[in-house]
Image (tube, rainbow, N blue to C red; front, side, top):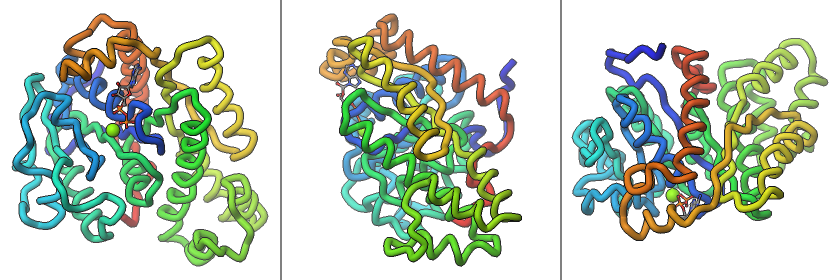
Length: 321
Ligand SMILES: Nc1ncnc2c1ncn2[C@@H]1O[C@H](COP(=O)(O)OP(=O)(O)O)[C@@H](O)[C@H]1O
Ligand SMILES: [Mg+2]
């Protein structure tokens, strides 16, 4: 049985990204956050789509007075003071809605300070809603999570962006985790846009390390094992759409040599649009809708993973962030 955490740090961090805008990252992150709270957990929903943040509107919280920008710019030192209670018991919002810092432009020291503060927040779960794109900073917030959800819709543009997101995440993970090792210099060279080693795909990166042999092979094998984004296929309308998840999994293995896990799909459903127009989360307005039933299955899967991997499961736990 799941045991409630009583310490001072967030027990688990879940992040939802996917490269493309409009695929349903906020929809999935927000409703899963609510489901967790409804299951009795304390949850902080962190809206890291700085610049495009709208989780507050969607949760019915009126224009937040304070947002993450204040903390990043040191106008507010205590991140706890930024937490905004919501109508859902156990669920607090960390809003990203304020002009100011764009996540892509966040400086290294700002990011490190923010991540440290985020980890120290007292909650069972921190659910991070990421913005679009594959900027390093966005990917870093994805990688620091214990569970990494990748939202894809069955459209070529979303699929293409998801592959790019997977590729960049793996490269970035290897970069971070190599910083303490003797391989650091090689990796730093490879990460350069004009890398002299002709390494452009995860498979080429893996092959490169394997050719070096010895410790390099062990290192890259570990990186492959740690890397396990969880794919959620959203806005599914047809049987053909349903095939996209397994097809992507297969392609990742074949072309990238990487594993992704398909953890569920969500149908395209009118109830989602209705809930947005009514300014209510789906989990509240249409709790028995088909997408909610599917989100509950996804939640069960994510919780099961958490139970199997107790403790800090972040693949960047040794991290140089
Ligand atoms: N399963 C779905 N069925 C119908 N509409 C959806 C579904 N998922 C998302 N949408 C629509 O897509 C829009 C964008 O979703 P959002 O979560 O804001 O995307 P993102 O955060 O990835 O930019 C929402 O306004 C919603 O109306
Ligand atoms: Mg969003």
